[in-house]
Image (tube, rainbow, N blue to C red; front, side, top):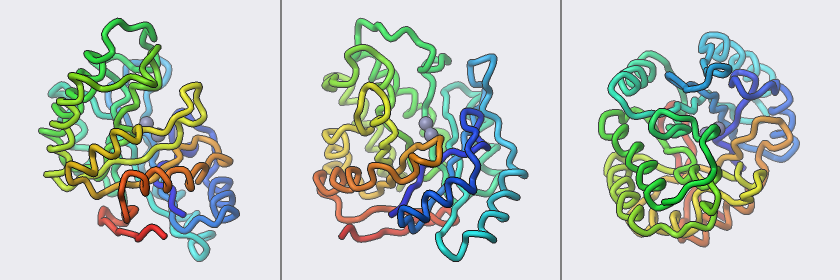
Length: 266
Ligand SMILES: [Zn+2]
Ligand SMILES: [Zn+2]
């Protein structure tokens, strides 16, 4: 069992101790876990900035490895918040160049400079909303390619009325463009089970989107719980595996020192 999307107290929206997460993961039979602490640039919220104390984070990872490293493989990743705009992109490029991680998950938590979390959930044109979301990621990835996997690629589903079941129409063309780019660059996507804890109660992305990625030649998929508390580490792993198999994948991907490893699904 692998969990490649975990937050601890090094993320501004979690207070969980790494130690608790490790104990939970070992109890559940985890083989590899990767912390993906939040790092945002110019996050549009006055109370929460999602800065990451890299040096302290690294120190704690080393400490925790010395305690639990014989029982489970522990990796140090980051969930980089991506936003369009020259200034944002330059900051992301510099940061990833200057900081070493095992795994870089690139996630869009904002749209047009506004946090998804704080947006009005009522929206008239959902197809336009999805198009803008996918387009913003594409704009960033055309200039920034120092990442491994795109986080929760249809996260936008989680925040707007009617978006959970929204069938992609025009926005599907934009998504295809995004997939073409991601696949050409050798990047992957993730199955994020964190949504199962929201009202939307769904995995991101939908099975349709996962199948589309596969059909277009995508092969790299990680699985992550997006947990912010220890108990959620490695949750719904079996469900995510079923999803992968249903979409026709035979392998699950993990990363170590930014290198991919493929594991045959049993
Ligand atoms: Zn995220
Ligand atoms: Zn996350």
